[in-house]
Image (cartoon, rainbow, N blue to C red; front, side):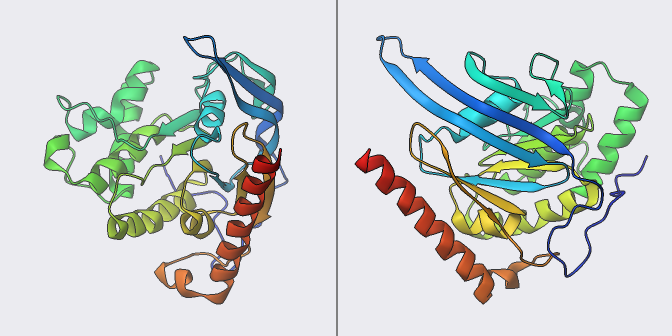
Length: 280
């Protein structure tokens, strides 16, 4: 079993699909309204129309409370009661989400399980072949740079190492789509930069479709093929910006003029979205 991508990224080039365009996720007119225990109505999302391309790294940014996580949870099948249509690789939302892996801000590793056992958890829940799952778990642990730590426990690892394991766990059942909800928000700045680079390497090796939520404009640009900007609640798509920075990207990318131009553009778009909300 090989984890090497069938369609590797071309070094020094921006993202170009290596196969005919295919939608990994399709959202049409998706809206979500909550009702609180006190009876108050909260309009979280409004008329979201979005296609996530197969093999794409999509970053989503927006102010706190704009509905980013709600949108991710809808895609993951963890949130119901919404209006509109959602399909995952052509399958309706009513079907089991075996094609999705999720990485949250907290690694959420089980303290009584060692690293290998934590990575294997989704495979056990889905009752996948044990021998093949163990082989894949070992490959993923090596891919995230933690070979030799299989029998360590979460308390023996740093925060960055635990998050690497949570990524391996999210990939062990070989999902087509990897959902990441502020995956580096709890890390210090230096560790966060390192993890940004490492996750891009993992993405390039596995050719997964990634949908990542972040509050960091620079992180969204550095990692994404495209950045989706959302307005304050109710969350709407304000803009979609293609990021034509060459790959592979490294820390030096952060100091380039093109990188600064993209971050400036996105900051202005976020300000425009906020202004529209205030004037509504």
